[in-house]
Length: 105
Image 1 (cartoon, rainbow, N blue to C red):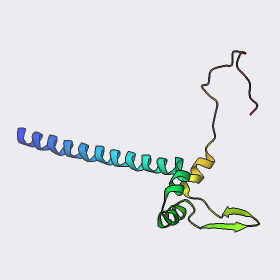
Image 2 (image 1 turned 30 degrees about the horizontal axis):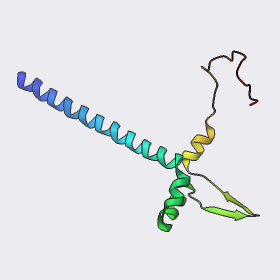
Image 3 (image 1 turned 90 degrees about the horizontal axis):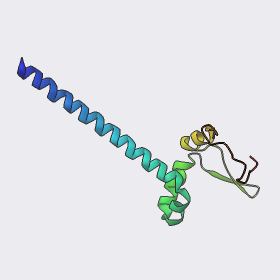
Image 4 (image 1 turned 180 degrees about the vertical axis):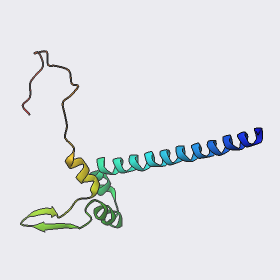
């Protein structure tokens, strides 16, 4: 019975290790995506032609159009659409005391 319990413990530890690895891998992917989105302009400036084409393909999957002097896209990548849909709320902010400057929204 003890050997069966030890086997179960080893299997459970292996499953836990796999789950931790998956979580770590997911975090790494998210951090990489965040880095690309927050630094897209810097990446563009320093990228080679091939890298610029790939970055453009990822960020603007249906390409970029130049119409009437403006650059336009028909669709953006999913990440930009997610950002676009988020609203910034002012919940949890401290109340103004009356001595700081007030800015219009």
